[in-house]
Length: 293
Image 1 (cartoon, rainbow, N blue to C red):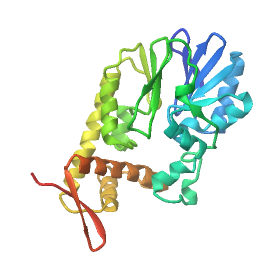
Image 2 (image 1 turned 90 degrees about the vertical axis):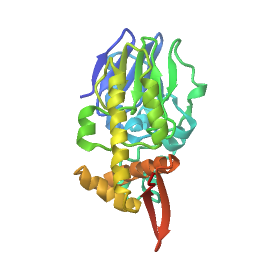
Image 3 (image 1 turned 135 degrees about the vertical axis):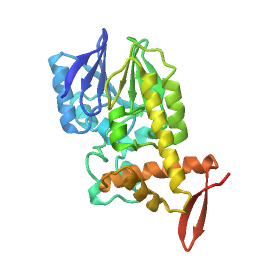
Image 4 (image 1 turned 90 degrees about the horizontal axis):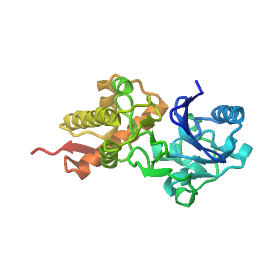
């Protein structure tokens, strides 16, 4: 764990729960995401020192705590700027917003932990960053507010949380999605990319991203079919959440309650917008029901 792996002349990643990218420029390195906590930051620092690398900046793909957890530690040690998109920067600078958004109110203590709420750090707009020549920012919305990825001049793509592995999908079934429509569009987009290597954050690097995107797309439509089947009987979001957990034999805890619950509500929004569902309120219960064709 936290092994530095070189995949091209100037492109590396650190093997860890949420892969950390490194691009070596002529006068220093750029780090893509920073792991899930201060300890991840320490391990990044150790690698940089072993390689005698100067940290020029951190690029955050998005504001989930497991991607920004090392930010504060590294920013204090190296006095480096941190860049992301404005929406993601708001959460990076005010990390209480992540568990608040997931829960839908002020998060209780069991949600205020490092896996959902990182330490805060100062940020700048990625549009204002001076990028290495040939380095590209790519828009990857859907998983979170305004997630981005990066293409290095070595033609290596860092794709953040666009896709999960087939093993993980078959085990947990529900990957976190904020906007289902944009997520599906992003899967279509990454399937068209022409790169040497693709590095998602939570699965193995691959030379065939289109195949992995297809696996994720099929799982999204499977979940849609499951929800539509359940909604043949008018149901509340909470009732549907229980049905989904039972159907996939998932084990609920506080974190899974908010992560899967938020995702199920995003699916319901998508199905409402697609006019596959309708809603009504009966006896103060907000119900979702499948529209019969």
